[in-house]
Image (cartoon, rainbow, N blue to C red):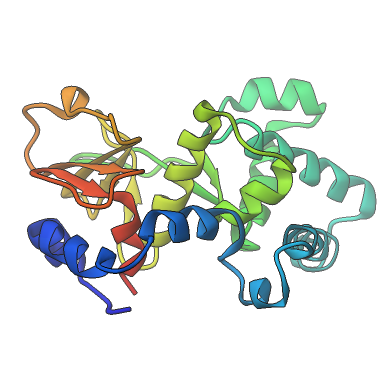
Length: 239
């Protein structure tokens, strides 16, 4: 498959989608990818794929995170709870005080544990963006690092509302490799401080981003878009 620049996708997405989807059941492939296509061992068979992803999570937690932060077993179990909490509420809107009460840990430790999870490649955090913005420590929105990790933790088919979190997880995962991501005042993502994206299903309209400059909809379940509505799967061709 060819690699496209973001500007090319936005400007020529109709033509690109026509070329990419021609002769392919592209939406079927994309849905399979979201569940079991991110890691190369999918070629070893789908039946064992998600269990292998879960093994990756356990290995990262009990070996990489433990070594990274000098964290002991009991605290690793707390970090694991944080990861599962994020996954089952994806996207997760951060409330540090509430999380601290539920997990019975201090805010200082909670910030550290979130940092460990991000550095270990298990989550993506977003902070507000825009002019005049000064970085703050607290992330406001958190995603599991990729949609296959999300599927493995869920162990089951997601509801329609949870699929929305999966779509945003995919977009964040694919986009972060080529652009800076932050939270806009309106919409789901601000990319490189310039493009605003709203993520949704095939019926998603532009009501929320109407009147904004450089605002786009990344829509799932459509092969070919129109206007500012771009098929979500095209953002998997950025690298």
